Length: 522
Ligand code: AHR
Image (cartoon, rainbow, N blue to C red):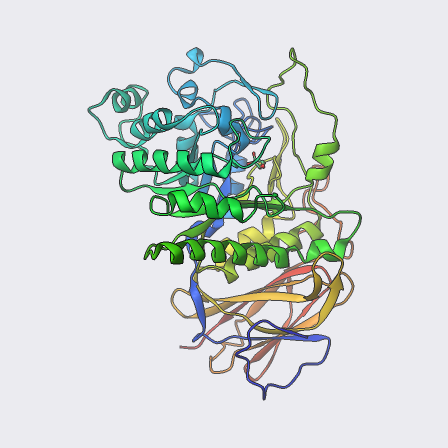
């Protein structure tokens, strides 16, 4: 039995093995859930932009070539920010190539993904698309092949209203108002040897602090994100963050975290418990941030921008034969087009729960990515767009996790895993709505074999038992997927909820994601 909060009183009865108990206590808050937690990521990679969000000639394309069917799904998904234009792509990108008359834009080699970048979509088109979604633009600057001056030029072009050469260029290119971008990533994954312009932590820290100071001198309103490690397996994980923050602590607002999980060697139990690894990852980075803070006797708090996270079958990608020919640079090739199962969706749900459990320190995040490339939304050129299984937990969390995340007081049966040791079979978090008129509980059953009841103990709250409801994502086959041929094979279904006084009980089948909404009588 795992108890995730030691404040549970000793007199609480031990639930039977097949039951987990979540005590919901509004007095024990983690903190407000920042809407930026439900961000996503669009990179010029594969078919994310071209044949993804943008496909002139598609039956649903609007006057600018954006697919209306994709826009509708992006709305439904509820993304709040979108990081752009990369990823590894940004480390070789010249932003100037993507502005001005389209017919004059150069075709360039994209070394990161061995593709041709046509530059038919650039800052103006992307910002215009994003305005249709209502999400906030988060830009990354190229610190791979470029440096301070090019970053400053982009900030001036994007954010200065008028009266300078670059702001005038933006106006001449059809955009009178500034883009007013607040969130800026200082490069991408600069610790990775695969990254153009890869640097040591010392080198990157020294560069990041210079670029950060310069950008702030131009626009003090910006929020700056310095690169953390590319993943927790990097040999420099931890020391990278410490070194970079020792340079840049006073100049930045966030440090980034990136992580991708996949099922390896058929070990479903370990894969389903990936949220435990994410919990540790976040806690280790928070400890590193705060140790630098303490050493500097600083009052400044740095938070985490978890700006790449998802399930990604990266091993499969690494083992695929890749085009490397100097005379073959395809446009928008099919790359990283993972097709997601129910098990993958349950892992994504577990990762969302992990982000919510750390809402006090993870105040921005981006599901990587949005369309076609390791994405919740898939498209077929000239054909339909559909929701992958992973779409559903994200859409649920973005729609309902508004308000205050409550610290989970959770007792759960356990099971063992090869990679994470013994883990709680149920993971869960509750969010109190902004108006205080409802509790939303998000839960995963990450046990591959056993169904478990979740008892939600509402203690002193007054549930409106007549209107409480629950739905779940589950299939008898945990590997069931939505595909072009069967786009609605897996969809959420309503499930029953029974009340015993102020305790709500819901059955969580093995490998499932469940959301319970309990309106409160005020
Ligand atoms: O999201 C795919 C790639 O993963 C990104 O380009 C890179 O930043 C990360 O390694």
